[in-house]
Image (cartoon, rainbow, N blue to C red; front, top):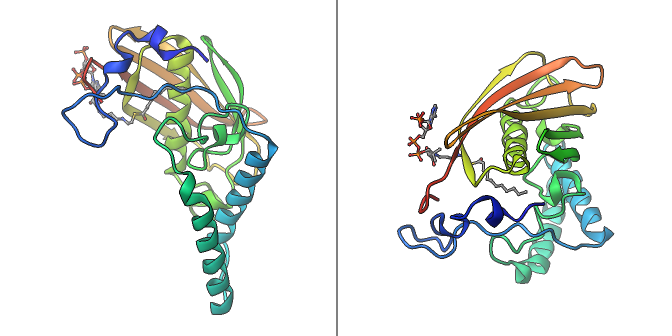
Length: 221
Ligand SMILES: CCCCCCCCCCCC(=O)SCCNC(=O)CCNC(=O)[C@H](O)C(C)(C)COP(=O)(O)OP(=O)(O)OC[C@H]1O[C@@H](n2cnc3c(N)ncnc32)[C@H](O)[C@@H]1OP(=O)(O)O
């Protein structure tokens, strides 16, 4: 992963992450890969299964009460280990599904270079919209994260998504291996235009997406 400071000489001057706007304290955190053992991936997979179960069960009161107690125990266990943005493990383990983040789709990056990024994975029960299809709001998350990687691998400075246009071509199934792939289409000054496609393994197009990412100016958050 390229040091973002090499791509953006203003990297340390993009607004504030202390919570208060109007002051600068170093801008975006540096994304240094985190070193973790297999237990971290196991924890995440267990938590994802809990998420799947949380949206797919109808619990008797005593089971809900017992589960709430166990969830509170887990909260107590984890709370002392909260760290500042950029120092958490989530999002900093490129080899894990969703780079080790529960927010992101649990997909694996297959290819990442200046020519583009390809990632493979499944939408699962947690991502259900209706009638066995992925929720339409989960696709922008998949595409937007891919675009962040694409513009970074292409060597663009820190940029934010100005717009993201999705055409939903076919219903996106759950629990089915899919591929999302995209690349920079063109760069015009501060603007990077990126295209991507979501397909099944037979190459059927499920959705395609075009986005504009705009390079941040010094001071922009
Ligand atoms: C692994 C490690 C990876 C690490 C990599 C980590 C990267 C982080 C990636 C995060 C990706 C996200 O999801 S970011 C989260 C979602 N996005 C946001 O929150 C962005 C919120 N919006 C903004 O902050 C702002 O609107 C900006 C920065 C996008 C643009 O504002 P600005 O800087 O004032 O720009 P402005 O002068 O208006 O426009 C510049 C040029 O872009 C054009 N432009 C601007 N917005 C639009 C638009 N919506 N549609 C068409 N064109 C537009 C203008 O016409 C102009 O073109 P011309 O006249 O020059 O031709």
